[in-house]
Length: 329
Image 1 (cartoon, helix red, strand yellow):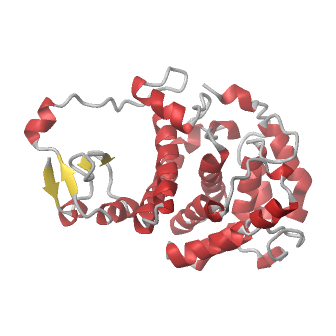
Image 2 (tube, rainbow, N blue to C red):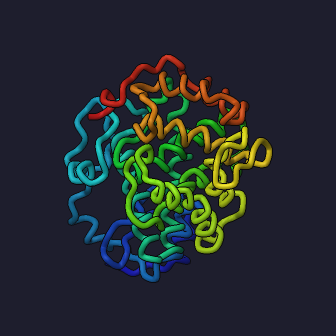
Image 3 (tube, rainbow, N blue to C red):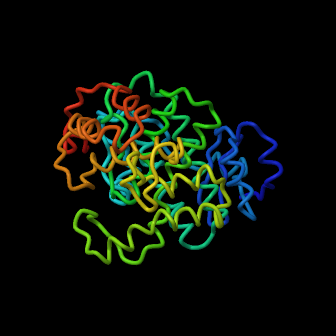
């Protein structure tokens, strides 16, 4: 392995070789475009390596082919599926990308919990960039909401699904590129405050009073973490603070209403609730995506801002009767 400087790497527009960290783990692949998130990831490593030409020639190349989701996943992913949860066989997001998004975000949270905040931030930005890029690639082929859904443990997958739905909705609402990047990052971080809660709440519909009191602190905790530790803007931090607020003032933690709730938070609130319903994370009996859309409409403008609400409902086909069990490979 040959040491390579961060200056040499970031001088490239496209990475010309695979890049490894000090543990020998590949962090970037040859051919990847060096986005701002990737550059930040590079800068947060003291030492980086590439293989020399002789080593590259003698190595057996890792399979990188993308697979159609009607086929069996490639053999290298079996352990990843066990670790990160089932694959969505109906998704327009290919199997390899599903796993990379789930592993990337889960690993970022783990790094954040180890107090390596700058590295975690770079990893989250990389996930954000990947979601935006893949959303652009598949958007013309997506007909149903079920074709966007990632599957797995809710606490790890929910921010990803919220971000994917939010990027599609932000495009529908014709936000610009910078705003879409902020919305995607806001969605990924909207529940970041939960990682500081003591104990794990697996069913929010069956919380004790003490558990509910603690749970309702996560927007406040998230706002603080985003501002003081991740050093991100108030636009993004405010989403963590306000995503449980409702248009009629019945939400929490402050019970604010209407235009007091930021535009980004209004978007994430819709996507957050929809993903919770399609993940059986509410006390509503929802068995498919069409029923979840009906439930959103029933909540209506009392709960959600009309503009993102109705844009979301009409964003893709309303007739998505796919049950959640049908998605699993």
